[in-house]
Image (tube, rainbow, N blue to C red):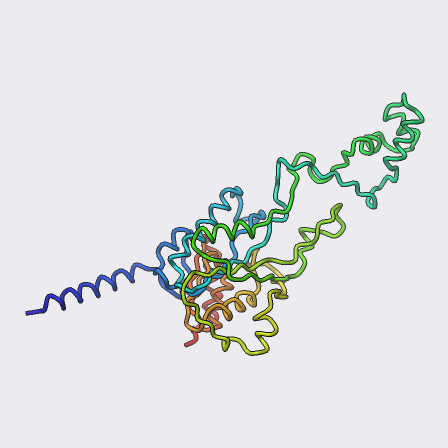
Length: 331
């Protein structure tokens, strides 16, 4: 007669095996929405999640997304990480501020582009002519000063606004506070932050524009910690590596030179450094916005297991092909 205890243990073991088979496979790129796929992961399995979400800057894969949609997406993905991460694990998010955030309530910046004026008539000269000829209209003042009536109007009314008179004014929108609050609400704590200095993005912020705004040339990496025991292993990096970048808060890493396969690629060196510091060999590294597969590829090269999520099929295929070229997975 079989012991009832043995039957119970066998049934419990089968139930556990069946339960594990329902979880997503490791060392794989899964197609779908991160918010749905995170709920299908084995709880406490992830040592490090490193990802770069949509920045709300108008990329093609952000079309139709409102600022409210964007906030809800990032907030939910952060919250759903809490169960997936093991205690003591890390959630590292690479993100940048929104540099051209439209604000319909912001007054329009009236830039008096002194150096760039093709007509050198100044406001002071127009006002002086107006005082001398108080009964003159702008057409008559224009004849006196040898310019167009539009120039008179622009100097008197400060309406020399270029680049979309009817579009909302834009400003810089900081995102660090939003991300920290969402992570705190989910149960994480801000453990560290790094700054990635990349190549200047002249395309979006040209030096000759009528503005004092700086070019886009850095992003942030916010590192959040899930409460629990964290293994600290200084042997993951050499002494020189710790001194050069491991313990440094500013990383100078060149951008991807040509985003031909994906319009928002980051260089392989960026996830490689994060993976080297915040995970150990054999650990599971997750990227819920895998894109072209850089995080997974870096994980493979550094002897970690990986898992990636991607919403768009052609990017998922791209990530799989890049990883396949790197196989076999190191022991």
